[in-house]
Length: 156
Image (cartoon, rainbow, N blue to C red):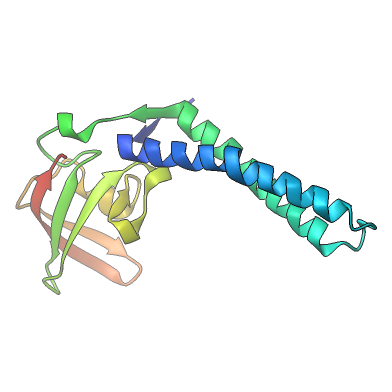
């Protein structure tokens, strides 16, 4: 089975979500299904069908999280240094627009661009791996080729 790299923060986030699903969401949906059953005929009971659908989603997410966490390889970025690799927090400048952005390269399950968490398998992260401060990288994006210069690399 393939190991999934995660930061400690990513592991904690997924673990918290799993505990919430098991301790709060699962019991709540079981109660909702029981209530909906009390309303009689299940074939035309929209509340029952909606609750069962939500239960299916919750159980699927629990299985997914358990699988991810069982395959997780937690890596502490603070113990790393040097060129860009997993866990690096990289500040880039777009060479065309001079717009600066900072991303941390993280595992797929914890990636969230809105929070600056860049998926290790994304085209940008793959282009950055192995590069050093001052290097330029070119990335193919849906809008065409983009060029970035690495301003800083930190491991925190």
